[in-house]
Amino acid sequence: MSELAPEVAQIRDLLTTGQRFLLSSHARPDGDSLGSQLALGEALDQLGKEVRIVNADPAPDLYRFLPNVSRIEVSTSLELTEADGIVVLECGTLARTGVEGLAPYTVVNIDHHAGNTMFGAINWHDASACACAELVCELIDALGAELTPSMATHLYVAILTDTGSFRHANITERTFEICRRIAATGVEPAAIAAQVYNNGSLGRLRLTGMLLDRMELEDDHRIAVLTLRDEMLHASGCADDDLEGIVNLPLAVRDVRAVVFLKHTTDGIRVSLRSKDTIDVRAVAVEYGGGGHRNAAGLTLTDTTAEARAALLGQVGAAVANADGAPPSD
Ligand code: 5GP
Ligand code: MN
Image 1: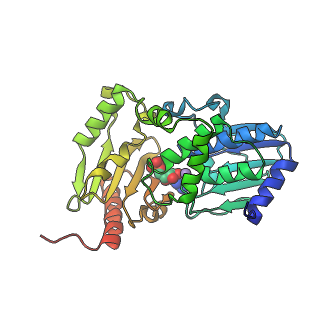
Image 2: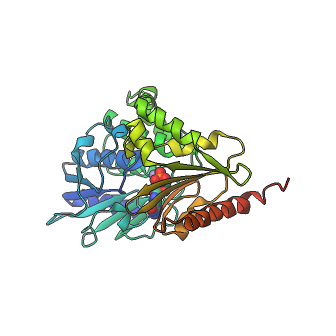
Image 3: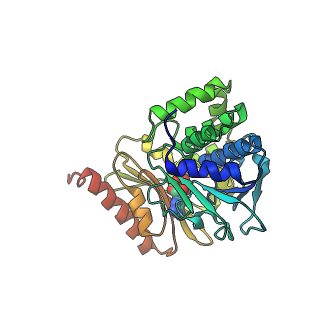
């Protein structure tokens, strides 16, 4: 086995010498945050540690099939007297957890988002990982824990969803090596994919239809804009949870280079951005205090006026033009 990076060895040492740990991840958890936490939690269980997993928001329905998902506690403020370490997974900043009260503890930061602020006492940041779960798999090995079928399921869901079903950048030999080991535990990738992709509600399909029906195309069809209206949720009987993944659909169109998904909330407009190739939507999100990856990022637009919306679309257009050159003038 190749030698561990110093930060990985430090994390291993902290986790093996301490006894009580808390794991957290980002608010509105996704497949990678949940899978990474649950797999690491089980590895620490194997070592006889006391483990709590605390997130600001519950797991979306889509991920309710994950083994042991019910062990995740939902709280935005931590009541904790003692912990030997807090492992924060999948977060570019500590604030992304949405959980108050973590800072006084020994925080371990394990993440793959570009722009991570290195907020931990120990920081393991690897933006070349396709999912945080790739790092967690390496940590499981470093801890000497066994990769069980349930952990394999956690890691597979994380990788499958964070790579957009093996389509995004950062898919490497390492990704497939982990997937090989996952399959070797006996879990069936096709069965997991069916849980994630073929198990939605009829309402979700109807909602998808409504959103696509009212999709706007800007910039010579290079930018697709999806706007969620409350009446769509009512008419389809869907909850916010059901939205996961819909933002990616317009990318199927050859001419579409970026997608903007807008959702009005009490805090402002939640915006999800997606892009193709070298178009950097993360840079746009960062301008608004958000973040993410080059091709998948998010932000909250506090100014909900039409002007602010137009300015955001202008920024996305500039990111597209920056990568692709100006649109054809005819
Ligand atoms: P989504 O559009 O699926 O909510 O998020 C896409 C990516 O951007 C994910 O990696 C997510 O963690 C990140 N992201 C979404 N919203 C925010 C935000 O408000 N702040 C930061 N830092 N990252 C975000
Ligand atoms: Mn991730």
